[in-house]
Image (tube, rainbow, N blue to C red; front, side):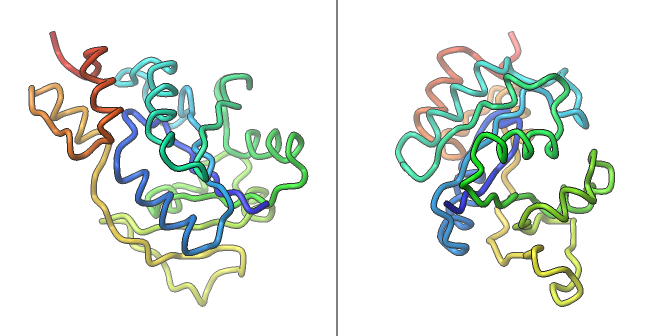
Amino acid sequence: MKVGLLFGSFNPVHIGHSAIANYMYACYRLEEVWWVVTPQNPLKTAQTLAGASHRLAMARLAVAAFPPFRVCDIEFSLPAPTYTIDTLHALQERYPQHEFYLIIGSDNWLQLPKWKGFKQLLSEVELLVYPRLGYELPESAQNPSNIHFTDAPRLEISSSFIRSAFAKGLLLPCFLSPEVYQYIMQYQLYQTP
């Protein structure tokens, strides 16, 4: 089975995540896309993170309507901090029948040399890289055959923008699935008291 892996803090998960996952699923003929919720990204501060259980719950709500999408919580059982290469190895060990594709933005592509075991990662998995504004990609012809720079639409919706809007009291229901928006309101996430 061809499985795309979309890693993220999903803090919060928004329609941009869904659009990228859908694009990769359709254009690269993936059979499933797993949204790998990261409890704590080693390259990010935990200061602005909603609780891991909240982010996991929101991700599950976001994917519930589309069966080829599913949430993967494997990093919750791995030693912290978690690293993509270690998570990939754990998934390969657990699901040897699957062929994994790593979905990352061009911002992460440019930071890849900072990742643990990035050279090994590049040799072990297909990468599907989508464009992000301000993070230009090199020409595809200059790269190995397992690295695919995609023409995915640029949706400049960020979790940090959504968190900032909520903190200012702005309501952005159209940036989130209705279920995720309702969850955020119910638990008063990202809102300053």
